[in-house]
Length: 639
Ligand code: ADP
Image 1: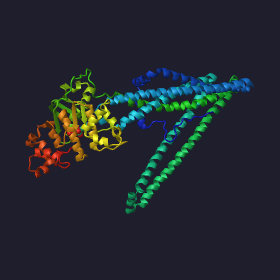
Image 2 (image 1 turned 45 degrees about the vertical axis):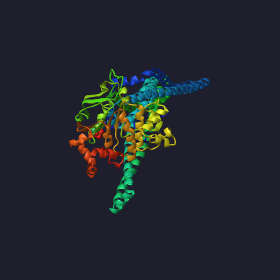
Image 3 (image 1 turned 90 degrees about the horizontal axis):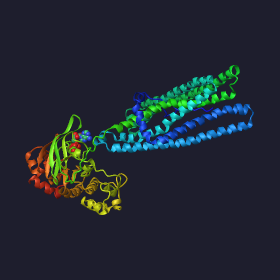
Image 4 (image 1 turned 120 degrees about the horizontal axis):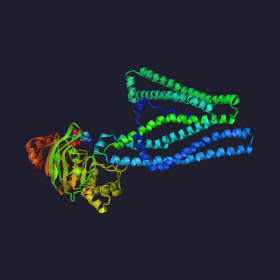
């Protein structure tokens, strides 16, 4: 007779739920099940085949036990050698057949599970791509990736093992029970009564062992903590200087003693557990032999030795499925929790969606208008309170203001990374919410401070903006962005790998590559979020040389920190406390003696005091030739 204790008591395995899991167990509703089945729907034919395999193999796996009765009664006791051989061969063939079907079942199983998770992953990725910027800034990246990887892997395990395990164990159990009742109902009932005697102690012992293992683990962590702390150089210095050797030793000895006691207890729990299992597992057959014997000898002489043997064998076949089914309850709840978590993600509505009837303007000049725009990331905390400005086609504006005043937030509203909570943002004289989202974003080029280059070659990074760009296009864009000389100097040219697996680029080089990328995109509105730090003056000069002609030739918004950039713009908007508090030209604003002057003075106060000439000419000229690094910074905005 084979015993399958069914696990559940080894280190790291847990077939019962913790209190926390019990408290968080999801409600299994009809809707949830229907939703799970909607994922299975495309695979119904394959599922039906799997089901068929499970039913046949469960039947076949019980058959050899039933044939044992025939082998004993008709073959052995009937002294019929040819029949005996036939029965033995049949039994072997059935086992082989059942295993073959098992192989087919496993294949189908994993095929279905893999395809469902394939669908799920793709759909989830699409869904996440449609989520707004707010989703990515407010959710931990690790959580998002866990949802995409381990949660969906869990689903795959659930489909390939939990569901089929429930089915095959339930069928095996039912078939075994029917076969038992068919032989002798009294013995079948005795068998059913015995099963819990075996299963319950197994579970109790498993639980005890698990909690001991946990305690031992905690104790082990404590010991490691003591060792790490006290055996390090600085730890030992501290111990020595405070004469704490004896105290530390006592702490270590205590933890060590607890640990050995726990280890002894744990290994003994395992030992007692084996005693319990083997005793109960032999009580079962013995009871059947006893009751069967009494029935056979005293009440019913049609009951044969073969029948009793079949019942004993079938009883043995029941332990495994019963145990698994009891554990399955835990797996089932965990699986449901997994599905619930994944569906929660699918249920999150994309905040920013394409309008129902998207507008695509015929021409694009890049003009922008903010009409009493308000915005808050979190309700109750308004970042932009009333922003009004107009940027005509071909012009440029510089946004300045103290750190955190909402400059980046303002420009993020144009490509709809966020939607304004009040007022209207117009692009090409159309409310951005009515424009086709892909078209809108394709018309806007943003160069940010923290330039992101993919891990790949320079060419791949550039082609991201324009996949069909020719070699000439690439060279032209890189020349304009002032980065071609650098690329030419690289051994591999455009094929140089950048990012964390390749060439480490400086901030300035990265930014110039990203400017080249934007040039290839050829947007009608250019947004340039100027870097405030980490660039040396030569890099800055190169970037400045690259962007100045750009600003000249197209509509642009510059989040500017350097005087030279600010002066290059047609108009300066000063943002503070969510409103545009000052606007105009540099010379006028400086006269005002307001926020702009204050920002200017904090950065240039000292330099201005030292220089006799008017600020305008001095700074502009100075930027190109006389100023040292940092002096050109109108104000810094380090967050
Ligand atoms: P600036 O570009 O002028 O330095 P930002 O537009 O980056 O300012 O930020 C304006 C304010 O909004 C700051 O107080 C900042 O903390 C807050 N903020 C920026 N991004 C987020 C976000 N994703 N979620 C919540 N608050 C944000």
